[in-house]
Structures are given as structure tokens and as C-alpha cells.
Length: 262
Image 1 (cartoon, rainbow, N blue to C red):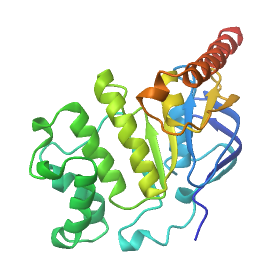
Image 2 (cartoon, one colour):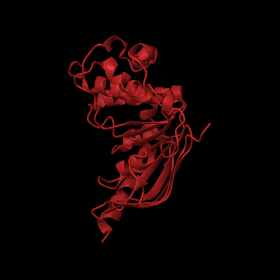
Image 3 (cartoon, one colour):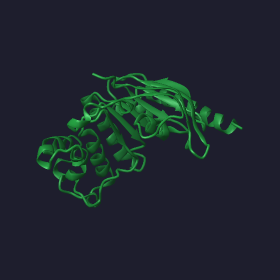
Image 4 (cartoon, helix red, strand yellow):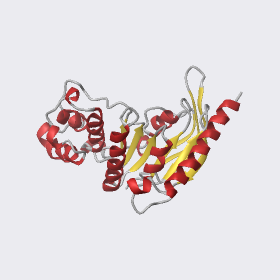
């Protein structure tokens, strides 16, 4: 079995217009680990995800992830890596079932062949009764659930998430945070999660990596204390508050780095 970890070492990324987006980025996410990536707007967090997903190539350095290696599972309708974007990006003309079926259909599996897997994931995200519903009939949280079901239907081992809950109300966001942790545990996923929220990063992750302003670099790492349960009681407890304060200080320092840069 191939390594389901994510490894970026000495990575630089310069865009065609000459802009240096990332400079000497090194990070390692172990198989099965949940890591959050925080930093100022425009610091290159999404670029890190795209490099890990194999959607872009580094200008220099080494990117070693399942998506950058040959994927022998692809022909069987599986994928090592799945990407969840900030917007659900559902096909508006297709029902919930057909949206989740899409990656399996592209891999050559008929609707009938894919039905058990599609319905399994729809039920897992709480949309088992909405298979025939269209995106305009779903709430924002339900559309994001459908997007996550589509990501999970290929049984990936790596999940890359780019601020997936940023546009949701706080109640829905906290509910999906809790659900995401359950899906992470159930699927034994390796997760790299980009967010602007310190509170979300600390609640979800085992480690928080903080990036500086452009050119983006990893400037701090904070390991989150492992609670007995990541629930409302922990969210209101002293360990969580202390962890949020420590990460907030690191993010403020990263902003200072950006402001001080020439």
C-alpha cells in the first residue's frame, strides 16, 4: 500500500507573472493525521492544496503525495485523493444522486453499478432522503454535504479541503465540523484543511500550521491537546481556550511578518 501522507520539502512556487507565492515550504502530514493550515489572505494556503492535489507543479522543491504518484486505483473508480472546494460546485441540472455519482461515472461505472456506493455516502452525510433533490432545493449546508459525499464516494485516503464551511452560518458550520471529525475517523483519512478560523482549526485538527504573508512559508506549528472527545464541552473548556489563544498569537505574528516584509 502506498504512503497516504503528504510531503512537501523546500517547495517554491512562482506564478507565470513572476509573483513568488511560496518560498521554501516544508510540511509533512502523516497518514491518518488531521492538519489545519492557517495564515493571512493571499499567503498561498490554497496553492499548497493545489500542489498536494497535483493540480499545479512546484517551481522548485519536492512534492510527494498520492496525487503526484501513479494511482493504480483510478481504473477501478477509486482515487487516492479528493478535493473539497469552498463552493460545493454541484451541477445545477443534476440531482443529488447524479452529482455524487459523477466521479464514478467518469471512471466508467454505470448508475446501477454505482448505486450502492452513492447511497452509502448520501446516507453517511445525512442526505439519504434527498437523492432525487436538485441543488436549488437544498440548503447551503446540504449542498456542502453533497459535495463531501461526492469526494468520499471514491473511498480516498487523502482529503484536501479549501475553506469548505466559510460561507455557512455558525450553527451549520459547527454541526459540519463535528460530522467531519466522524467521517475522518470512519474513513481513516489523511486531511489537510485550509481555514481562516482559528477556532475551527483548533477544534478539528491535531496540528495547526501557520503560514506567513506572501511569499508563504510555514512559520509556526501548534500541536492541539488530544481531548477525550471533541465536543461542545471541550469547545468551552480551558484547554481549547488556551490552544486558540496560542494559535491566535502565532497568526498575529504571521501578519506582522507580512507587514514588515519589504
